[in-house]
Image (cartoon, rainbow, N blue to C red; front, side, top):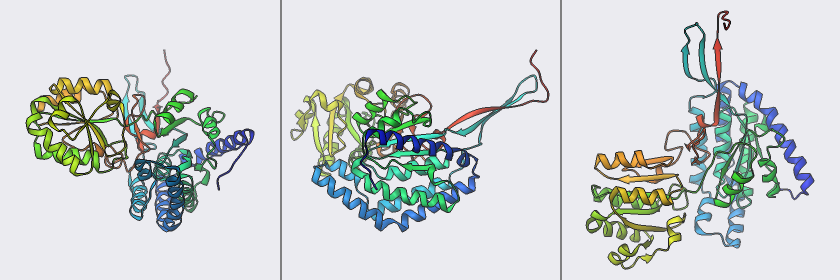
Length: 426
C-alpha cells in the first residue's frame, strides 16, 4: 500500500529499509547457488499465479495514465498483457538457469615466489534501482540482483506503482519459499520524490551503487545528486547507417524492425543515416517501407527533395529520442559522414551499420564509441535477454565497471584471494 508521509517519516522509513537491506546481504551472499535458483523459480511460479492480480493493478495504472494524457510510447512501456507477464516469468526462470557468478574465478596465476593469486567474483552488496514506467523492471532487477547475491531496493515510478507492488509481492513470496530473507528485495512504499533523495544520499552507507532506469530528467538528477557510484543509463538515441554496399532487401527489413517492432524501447532506432552513394537505390524503398508500417519520416533537405512526404527536420530532431513511430533521416558522405554525425549526436547507447564492405564495418566498429555496435542486425537486439544474460536492469552507457546490458556478471565486484605457503616479504 502506498504511503503519504512527512519528510521526517520518509527519512526514518528509508533508513530502516537500508538497514534491512544491509542485513539481508550476508545470508544472500552466502546462499548456495541452488537455493538462489530455487528462489527464482518460485518467483516465476508466483508471477504466473499472480497474473490476475498483476493485470488488475496494471489496469488501474493504465487508467490513471490515460487520464493524465500519457503518450502512446509511455503507455506501451506501462502496459502488461498475459504474454508480457509470461515473458517476465520466463525471464526470471532464465536467470535461474544461468551459471552462478558468485565465487567464479575470473583469473588465476602464480608468482615466482610461489604465491597463488585468484581474482574471484563477489556480490556488490546493496543496489538501489530507480526506474520509471516499465513495471517489468521490478522483476528483472529483483531477480538479477538475487542471482548475483545482492540485496536490492527498488523505487519504481508513480505511474506504475500498483503494478510494481503486485509484482514485488510475487518476488518476496519466492524468496520466502526458498528460505531467503524477504528483505533482500524491497520496494519503496511511497511515490514521494524525497525517497529518491534519501536513496541517492546512500541511506547511511547502506547503498553501494545506484542504477537509474528512465528518462533524461531522472538520469540527470541521479548523476547530479548521488553520493554513491552510479551505473549510467542514458537515453537510447540509436542510429542506423546504411552503406552503399548494403543489401537492399536486408536494409529494408532491418530498418523497419529497428524502428517499428517496439517504438517505446531504448533500443529503437531514432535516426537513419544513408550513404549519399546509395541514395538512388536504397533511400526511397526504405522510406516507403517505414511509411507503410505507420512511421512518420522527418528528413534533411536532400531527403525531402527525394521523398516529398517527409517533414523537414529541425536541429532538435537529431537530438531527440522519439520513443514513437517517428524517425529522422539524413544523407551522409559515406562512412566518414556517418561517423561524424554519430559522434555529434549519439547518446553512446546503440548504433548499427548495414554493409557488406568489411572495411566499412571495421571502421564503424573501431571509430564509434557506443556501448553496443551491431552489423547487419536490428538495434532492437540491444537487450540483455537477447545477449543471453537472462535479463537486464538496463543498458549502461558509461565506461566504468559496467557497459552495455547490465546483467548478472555486471552486478558483481571481485576480490583477490592469495594462497601462500609461509612466504614473507623481504
